[in-house]
Image 1 (tube, rainbow, N blue to C red):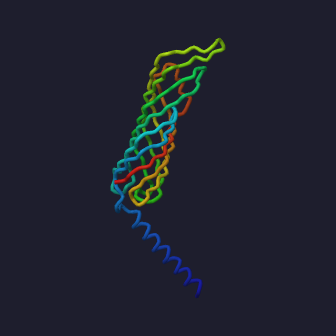
Image 2 (image 1 turned 120 degrees about the horizontal axis):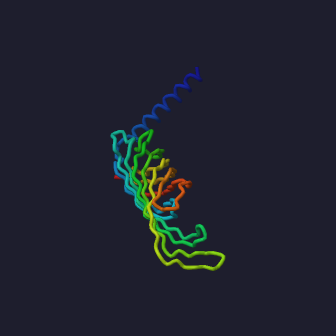
Image 3 (image 1 turned 45 degrees about the vertical axis):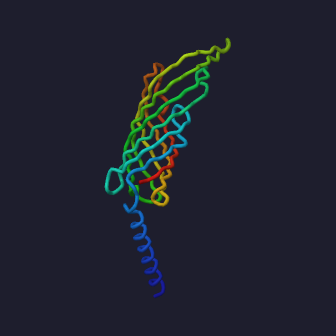
Length: 194
């Protein structure tokens, strides 16, 4: 008799816990807009920062439109050249939350189109014969598609913190672009939900 009483108490406590969770994770006071600062954005062109906007599109909070915009910088060496590179990157896509975006800790998967505008300046040719400064600018664009994975947390229904990793394929207007490197986006964001 005691085991059945214990099982019934466990069942009732889990039911009340799940009801409390479903009430907490409902639409409630969770806003449909998220505006975020992106203090760290890493893509094919370096490390940078940006801004992020997300809008929930459905009543069940499962589908969202999102658009991060960022600027990245890279001072490095590539193919015998010391280079300074700047890129302005824009991505636009949709993301799907299997259990809704209204809640404390959420996972989402999405897809995005990306466009990067890249500017090289001050190339320094490092060759066995010596270093030669190529003082000019080189400009090209890169575009592609990404599949994104998100892990996001909402604190007190207003503060949103999240991470994103996107990998995909890209094309470019650069003449010697071989297309073998993946199109990559890694992002950390902190924002306000309203």
